[in-house]
Length: 110
Length: 117
Image (cartoon, rainbow over all chains, first blue to last red; front, side, top):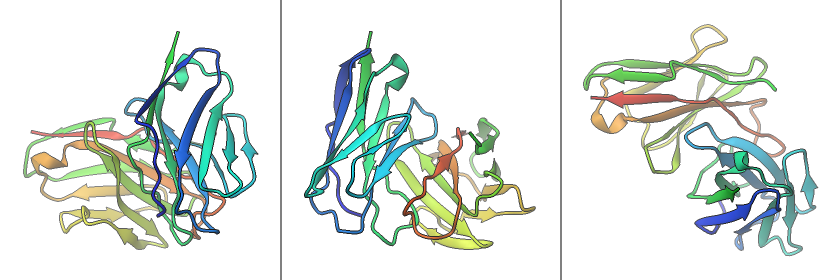
């Protein structure tokens, strides 16, 4: 799996956009970027994934730079329930399972 | 949205005892996983299971661990003789097909907290 680097922690004000960065400079051409989150001791929850185009779903947007060496997960209007550890994962192209790192602890403040 | 169901939510056992953790994956899913998370640590992959056999396993998944899909709906993790260091949250997960991860997402259950005394 390509190595990813994320900040250890971030804060965001409730109602504001939360922008979570991830560096994956060793990513290969066929490797996708996945984002999951884990709300306190619950099972990880899929958020979004993408290859090179920006992606949006009901939960978030994923912006991938043109060189694909980094990406940003955007939660457009963060709520207190978005407080969680957010994982950026880049499995190898042949992977059938995910490897979780330490992630970013996002705390949404009232 | 469909869910992966795990039972029990908490299990307390004595060191040396056998435990079985149970999971009901999403009904049309074909690929199943067990992960674990020791308190304060990362989520760690244990084993994956496809087509009634283990597909991959980590170094953690030694001879004390086994998995089974006994009846087409349940997926179980057995720890034969529990140790103190097996205390962790155990997560079951599933996904739709047996191919590579591309285009797919893993659905995780809410976990079983195993405490070994």
